[in-house]
Each structure stands twice: as C-alpha cells, then as structure tokens.
Image (cartoon, rainbow, N blue to C red; front, top):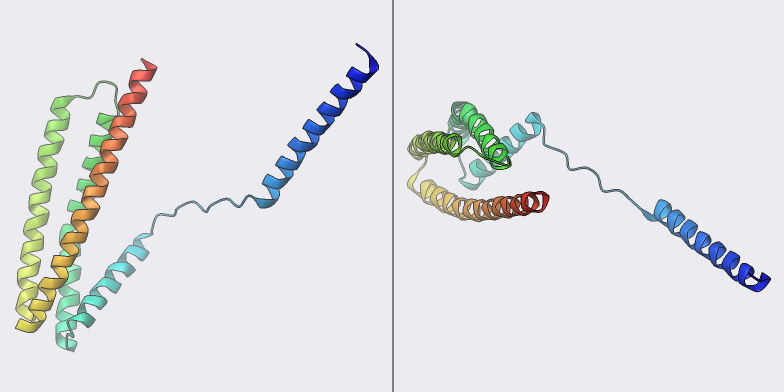
Length: 183
C-alpha cells in the first residue's frame, strides 16, 4: 500500500470520526426528552370530579339547596360505584393478560366476559337510579338541559369506546403477528 492510499484512508477515518462526534454533540445539545406521562393521583381525580360537578351545577343554574343535594348525590353515587369500577378495571387487565398468553384459556375468558357483563349491568342500574334521583331535584327546564348534556356525553363516550376498541384490536393483531414470527 503506498503513502497516498494510506493518507486517503486516514483522512476518510478522520472525517468519519468528526462526523460521528458532531452528530453525538448535536444530539446531546438539541435532544429534549419528553416528560413521562404521569398518571393522575386520586386527589386529582377527585378534584376533576368536583370540577365536573361544579360545571354541571353552574350550567343548570342550581340554587344553593340544589347544589348541596347534587354534591351529596354525586358523592354517594361515586362511593356506590367505586368498587365496581375497580373490579371492572381488574377484569379488563385479566382478560388482556390472558389474551397475551400463547395459549389463552377460552373458559376463563368466557367467565371473565360474563362477570364484566354483570358488572356493567350493576353500573348501569346505579347510573339509572342516580339520574332518576337527580331528576327529582331539577326543575323541568333544568332537566331538559341535563338531558342535552348527557346526550352529548354519551356520544363522546361512544366515540371514546370505539377508539379504545380499535386500539385493543390493533394490539391483539400485533401480538398475534409477533407470536407467529417467534414461532
């Protein structure tokens, strides 16, 4: 190998190492990590519920007595359905864990699905009872406005549910493909 070739190789290595060093320095200087998504604390969740209650009370123009009744009814409803929501969340996690296994047990999934159905029925019954009692403290005008608010909320909830279901389907498909690649 002659001297010219050695010099060209040396210069090429030098240029490459400078480029790599500049890339590393640029990454260090300009990279700003995104903050990890935080899960809301119980206090923040309660505060959000309180804010929602206050918004509803303000939108319906409740008087002081109605506000007090509404606040106690909301607290009672939240306490009544709290355990149900926790169990539902746990069942959903159990279902997803079972679905992620290489050989999910169909009988376990079926029994969990039936339990989820019962829990949803209980949740709906509690919601219906809550709305009927809420109706009793509203004037006819307030109740009409409340119906409109719930109608909008139900439509938004349906859209959210559809997005969550699509996300679950995509995850299942991804897991299925990953399993097939591994096997």
